[in-house]
Length: 173
Image (cartoon, rainbow, N blue to C red; front, top):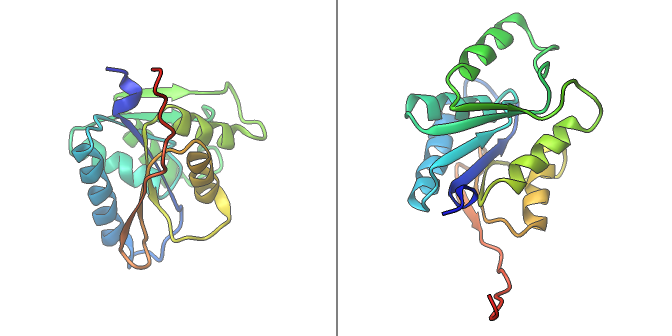
C-alpha cells in the first residue's frame, strides 16, 4: 500500500493563551491523533513551527509513533529564543526522519513546506479557531483545494469537526 495513504500532517496556531489552553491543546492533539489512527494513519508529518507543530511532535514521540519533521530550511529556528531552539533540537532528535526542503531561508519556503505537507498526506489534522489569516488558514486552504479530508480541533470551543470532501469516482480505474 502506498505510504501516502497512511500519512497525516498537522497544522495549527503558534500562540495560545498559555497556560489556559496548554492542557486542552495536548488533549486536542491526542484526540486528533487517535482519530487519525482509527482511519489507518501510521505516519505523521509536522512542519515543526512553534506551537501546535512542536506539541504534536512531543506527543507523537511520547506515544512512540512514526513521525517526520519537514523543515522548510535548516535555520528555521534562527530567530527563536535560546530556550525555544534547545527544545526544538531536542524534539527533532526524536523524529523518525528529518527532511529539509531548501538549503537556506528565502521568501516562500514556509508556504512550500505547507504545500509539501498537503501533497504528501491523505489526511489533514488542524488546531484551528476559524480565523482566515495566517499559515494555518493557508495550509487548510491548500488541503481543501486538493479535496483532502480534514479533522479540525477548535481550541476555543474544544470541538472536533470533520471535512470530508466528495471525490469524483472514475468508473474506468
